[in-house]
Amino acid sequence: MAVPTPPPGQEWLNKICRWLALHPYRALTLAVLAALGPFLAKPFNIDDPLFLWTARQIQAYPANPYGFNVEWGWTSFPMWKVTENPPLAGYYLAAAAGIFGWSEIALHFALLLPALGVVWGTYRLARHVCHRPGLAALATLFMPVFLVSSLTVMCDMTMLAFWVWTVAFWVEGTEQKSFRKLFVAGLLIALAEMTKYFGACLIPLLAAYSLMSKHRVGQWASFLMIPLVVLCAYQYVTQAAYGYSLLYRATDYALFSKVFFAFSKLHLCLTALAFTGGCLAVAAFLATLLWRPRTLAAFAGGAGLILMALILDGGTWDRYGLAKGVPRISAEIQFVFWATAGLAVLALAVVEVGRRGEAKTCLLALWILGTFAFTAFGNWTINARSVLPMAPAVGILIVRRLERTLLTDDKFWSRSIMICLAASAALALLVARSDFLLATAVRRCAEQICTRYNREPGTEPRTLWFQGHWGFQYYMESFGASALDVKHSALNPGDRLAVPSNNTNLLPPNPEKAELLEVLTISGPHWLTTWNPTVGAGFYASAWGPLPFAFGPVPPESVSVYDLKPLAPPPEKK
Image 1 (tube, rainbow, N blue to C red):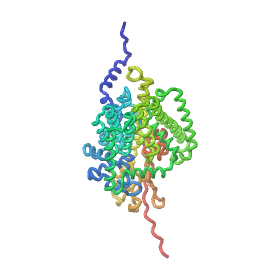
Image 2: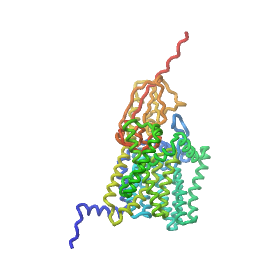
Image 3: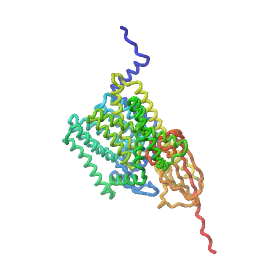
Image 4: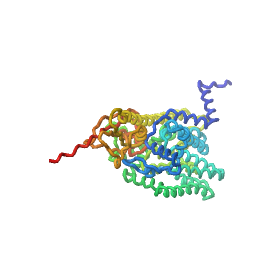
């Protein structure tokens, strides 16, 4: 009997698949480098400067990471009042900058290590739950929230790296009764919570998993005391150094913000669903493979309910800066779609628990549902950075369900799964590119403004002031401009003031005291963005927009430049 000849290209594909199976960590490393490498020159933006300033302070005064003032909110504040995160990410940046320097490429290159750590850790954890851990790791990598978050110098990806490896070591430690691995897991929890306070949620999560798997409190509980002791010590140290517990302050800020923005619980829940569905878009692309037609029909019914809730809650949408007409309708359609996708993510966690009911499945489900609850109701705002921690758990559960529905034989991956994964990767790369273009436009605005107005040879000395924060503030100060402190800055006639449009804490000057010189515009992303209220994109804070990213005509970044007029002389006495 003749041996069938493989179809053209099949033999080469089989060789690649075999190599991937034999060298999973190398393959995943290459995938991460290929996805993130083109964006390593991304300018700093949003809250990146807070971590950079903390790192510079740490290089000079390692024992006092927050002992400096920063202009953040119309006036100068102590850094410990501004930041809402512990300092471990700042120490990592300080060490990386000491080795590689302070350039964008250098620090983004250093932050590749946490991104690799998350992907590697997802692979290692997935080996205990499913048969194709490589697919779970790639599903995590090609989520929009993963790629965009990997291209910041904030603390989120570093915390998640500690988180994933904590869960992996804890699962292995409880199964193998290895005190060494449980001890390592306890230390990793401490590192996670000192990177971002959300890391402390690992304590109840792993305690619940251990109780479900062991059915009693055992010696494992003693290892959860390690992060509790570290957290208490941090409370004591920050209280002594700054006169206030920084953890309590972060909690107070979250409560204050919930009251300040005053969104209804319904709106918060719907927005959290939209962020979950959009940030973890791979679940939407694989929906037809994950669910039966009647379940998809039920989700369609859920979309109808979301649309009705959106209509009833339409007054809340009026509080956003959404453009009227077609842009608003487009944003509403995208909102309903991604909120339905978010509903499917939560359903995946619930259904898998109901079907299997084992401890590891419950661990992943609690991981997802707990993160969603914190995103919707616990954090100071709904943002993609809060959704990020559930990405590995969603990737693993997706593969586990696919293995029961499609991957029933020894095939590497089915063609349909590969197509869906490629589509998710394409969207994630487009979102990452749009965020890159946004940050680049912000830097170009700052550079051109300072070139035109901060260096005018042959003229009298004058000060170029600016309002706004984030990356705009970082680069304006780098190019020699001064942040406007409304309480203390001494403004003189002839000074210039730059006010960006797509920014925060803005107080446009009185037209009687300032003359508009020009409005500088720089094109950024055109039809997809992560951060612009006119199209509803609020990746970093839902107060900016109810979508993590939005398709639509994106206006350019603009900065208005004013010439401060001389004060009118007092009227002469008659």
